[in-house]
Length: 67
Image: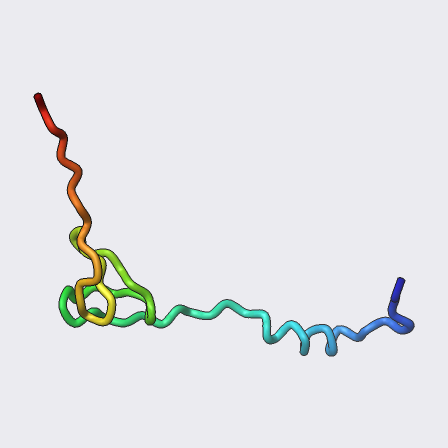
């Protein structure tokens, strides 16, 4: 099994770790509803699924039949 021959310095360790950081997600404002959502993602608003400002899917309301 591989193991390091020399101890890695804290500077080299920290240089490697600088790339592991949290990124703030970019939000877009929908033109039709004005709601904030993630880019390149569909989002629900008032029972409708929107993508790029257009309705993609409408939520069907379940109706119960009574005899």
